[in-house]
Image 1 (cartoon, rainbow, N blue to C red):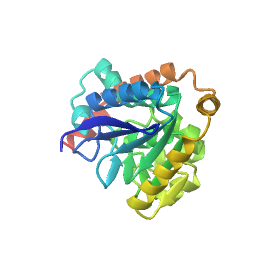
Image 2 (image 1 turned 90 degrees about the vertical axis):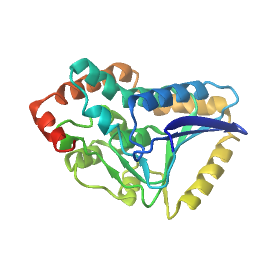
Image 3 (image 1 turned 120 degrees about the horizontal axis):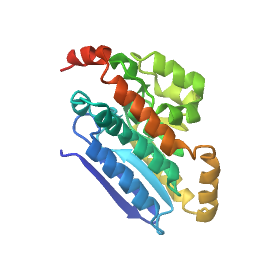
Length: 249
């Protein structure tokens, strides 16, 4: 299958889906489309709630495209690369509608940032999480504000430092990333749909005002996440990271 970002609107529920054949590791073009789609769909009057999902059964999101990562040769290109997830997170933050996350499988790096940026997140028991950035000589600088906001500094630092380990979905639920964890994709999808339909019965204005409250204190994230992207863009050019990346080529 080819990579895509697409959306569908039915009865006030907008479903935004993304996919990339390489375990949903997302190149800059897909991240840009995703951010733009979230913004566009979120501003549609007929949309009352958004479901965010990915295609495939095994991996929700494996982070950013490794193929693009290993081609970075200067700091500006690096900053642009790492700004991909920053732009998605900021689009989700600014979206006036509640975003329900549907996490069917493992999620890594930037994928954890997307899950943490949803307003309500449901997952399967297979949706383990990992922040692997330290393994290649960088860090989860861009996504850590979103993860810290949802899970706290302690949980975020635990998975950031223990960069080799997948943490089970039950752990992520305990730390607040997931609201519910289901035994199967089918059970999760049924719950996500029912929950979205129920949200459509709420006052849209009240939900919009609540979302503002939920994200209070993040007005500086346009600047903050750009600064974090620049840090990663610089570190990816370090001798340590260059040598590490050679092992993966």
